[in-house]
Length: 161
Image (cartoon, rainbow, N blue to C red):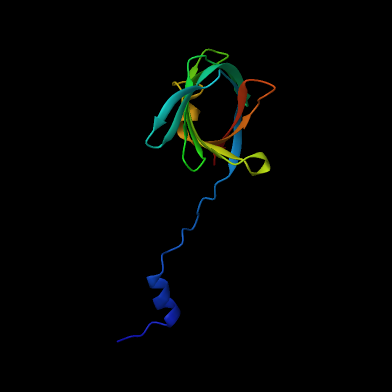
């Protein structure tokens, strides 16, 4: 029986490395200033205190993207017992040439000041046509409150490459 050198035998036991493993990077897509109304308390549930924040408008811009946030969405929020807020916003944005994009932005928020964590996963649905490229990627974002200067939030959206 022929013996393999130890290194060859070990290499057969270890998972094979991928020759071209993708390392994610982020590419800016757009920034949106989203106007909001005062939040409404929906009561306590088994997972924590529930809120609804109406989305009343706004605007967005990015490379090849520009338009307005439509006043029809809302942000459902859950304040958990551990102090973490889970936000689940669903709204539409209309480009300057009339295409309507549907956005679902799920955010996790905790901490204050320089220790504040407010990052999200974002799903964008676009119609066929010039914005169909938005349907073919994973997006992440950041959320910054613009209060007290303005009843709004700033959402920065990045495509994962």
